[in-house]
Amino acid sequence: MRPFIAVWELTLRCDLACRHCGSRAGKPRDGELSTHECLTLVEDLAELGVREVALIGGEVYLREDWLDIIRAIAERGMQPTMVTGGRALTLERAHAARAAGLASASVSIDGSERGHDRLRALDGSHRAALEALANFRAAGVPVGVNTQINRLTWKELGATLERIAAAGARSWQLTFTVPMGRAADDPDLLLQPHDLLEVFPLLAELKTRATELGIDLVGGNNVGYFGPYERLLRDGTEAGYAGSCGAGILTLGIEADGTIKGCPSLATRAWSGGTIRHAPLRAIWERARPLRHMRDRAVSELWGFCATCYYADACRGGCTWMSDSLLGRAGNNPYCHHRALELARVGKRERVERVEAAPSAAAERESPAASESRRAPLRPARGAPRRGRVHSIDGNVDARRCVCARRCSDGVARSARLWARPRGRALAPFRRARAAARHGSVRHCGLAVIETFRPFHHRCGELLRHRNGEREEAR
Image 1 (cartoon, one colour):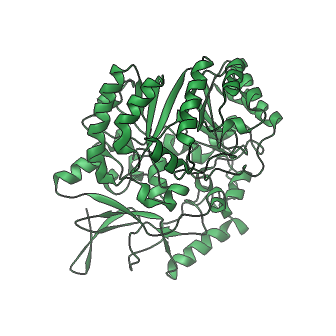
Image 2 (cartoon, rainbow, N blue to C red):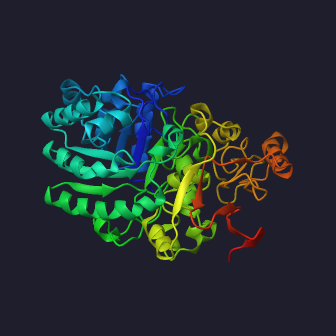
Image 3 (cartoon, helix red, strand yellow):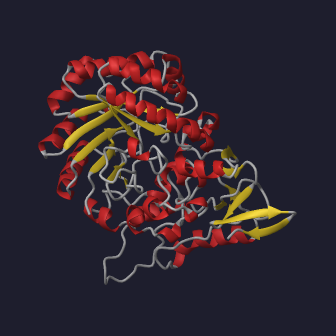
C-alpha cells in the first residue's frame, strides 16, 4: 500500500490568525526541517510512490526555500500543489511558483467579506484572497477555492459560489469546521449535528449549480455520510460514496519538524508515527501503529451510534479527525447526515457542548508519550521480538478522561491500550492513569455529545441510559 497524496505542512509560520485554525498557526514550529532535510524528504516521498504533494502551512510562501522545494517535487515527477490564505500572495510570487513547477493552487475564501474577515481575524483578508486568486490565474496556475462550513459561512455558500465562479475558480472544496485548536476555543462557531438536516439539501443545490458553472464541487473527508445526496456529492468517486477515513491509506501527513501522521489534521500527541529524523519514511509508513490505525481497524472498535449503524462496515465512523477532536476517541462521529436523519425519524437530535477548555498549543503538539513514540515509533516486523516500550496510550496520558457530558458518578477513564508490553519507566504513565481512575480524579473531554430528548453518556464505548435514577445498559 502506497499513499496517493502527501499533505506537507512546510512551516507553521503564518501571517493570519484564523479563528478555526486547528494547529494555532502563527509562529514557526520548534525544530522545523532544514532545506537539506526537506530535499531529502522529497526524494523519500518519490521513492515511496507518492503522486501529489500538497504544501500547506502556516503559510507556504513565508518559508524562504519554498520555491526550491516546489521545484524539487516537480523534478521528481510528483505533482506539487499548495493551499494559501493569500494575504501576501503577490503576482511576482505567483509567477515564481509557476516557473518552479506549481501544478495548481487553492485559496481559502470563507463567505462574504464581513464573514471572511471575521473568521480570518483580519480586515482586508477577503480582498487579499480574491487578489491572490486573480494573481494565480494571471500567472497561468490553475486555481480552486476551499471553504469552511460553520455558523458564519453556511448561509452564505450560495453567494460564495457565484463570487468564486466569476473570479475563475475551477474547483471548490467544502469542509466542516472541526473543534480543534482555536475552533475549540470558540464553540459558537461550530455547526450542531442537527444543522446537517438543513445544510445537506443546500449542498445538493450548490453541487448542481456548480456543475452548471463548470466548477467541480468536492466535499471534504468530514462531509458525509450515506444520506440521500451522497451519490450526487460524491459523483467523482468510483463507488459513489465517501467510504472510510483515508488517513494512513491514501493520505500521508507531514509536519514542519518532520513528524509523520496518517492525516495532517490529526492531533500530534496521539497520532504521531515518529519523525524522519529518527526513522526512515518508508519504515514509519509501513510499520508505525498510528499510521496503520485505519488499515487495521475493525468494525468492533466502533462505539456509540456508529457501532450500530447499517453502514458501519463501509464507513468505519467516517472522519477520524472529527470524532477524535470532538470526543477524544475515534469511531463515533455525530456529524453524519445519515445519523441525523435516523435520529430525526424517531424524534431526536444531537447537539454538542463544550465541557472543558481546549488544550494549549504546546499541549496539543506534545505529550509525555510523544517523546517515547518518537524514539520507538515502529511496529515490530513479522517474527521480530517485541521491545519493552509503550508506543502510546490512547492520547495524552496526563489527562485520562471519560467521554462524558456531565460530571457524574458514571465518569470513568478509558482503559489504556498498550501496543507493546511495558517495562520499567515506560510503565509509569500507565500506572498514574490507572491510579487516577481508581481514585476518581478523572477529567472530562473538551466536547461531548448530548442527546436533546434523552440525555446519555458515553462510558467505555457503551451507551448508558438513566431512568428513574437507575442505570441501564443499552443493548
